[in-house]
Image (cartoon, rainbow, N blue to C red; front, side, top):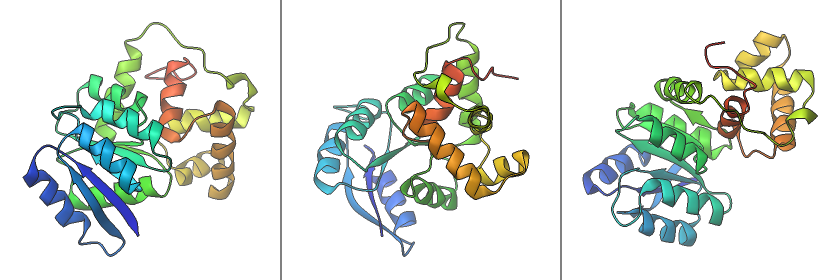
Amino acid sequence: MIRVLIADDQAMVRAGLRLILEAENDIVVVAEAGNGEEGVRLARREKPDVVLMDVRMPVMDGLEATRQITEQVEGTRVIVLTTFDLDDYVYGSLRNGASGFLLKDAEGDQLVEAVRVIAAGDALIAPSVTKRLISEFASRPESAEIEGLDSLTKREIEVLGLVAQGLSNAEIGEELFVSETTVKTHVSHMLTKLQLRDRVQAVVAAYESGLIIPGS
């Protein structure tokens, strides 16, 4: 059973999300929070698998709450869910440890799938958000040093580049003519060497380091 915490300052939104999620037989909502501070407190207590996190909330916003939860609650992963797709929210959420980012206009089945994907240890960013994220890096002339990058094999660098383009393991396998299992192994090794938590952090690292050039 996937245990979910919903953090949103609008009671009707929380009720709607709960209704969608609890219609599934493998998901249960264990708590609801009306602000970021309450979200952090409940996450510490309930230790959910996934937190659905609104960005704009009173007392403590979703970006800070995401940072605290991902740093303090082991095994809990955050999906940022907002009506705003502005670059600052996308970039800030991912840098603060979010494993997924979805807009609130996503369909119910997309939300459910996102929760399952994140709970399984993968990461997810809406396609429209991915485009904005790439644009964000395109506007940054400087690149950052990413520790461990020089330890990657040629194939692992290829895999990192394809992950940064948003390809799934199956799609990467087709691109490189290898099995999906082999791709998973390469991704795992790459994340370990770069000391990254998941694919979202790998996307950020690929663009920040200049390894991948937006538009290339």
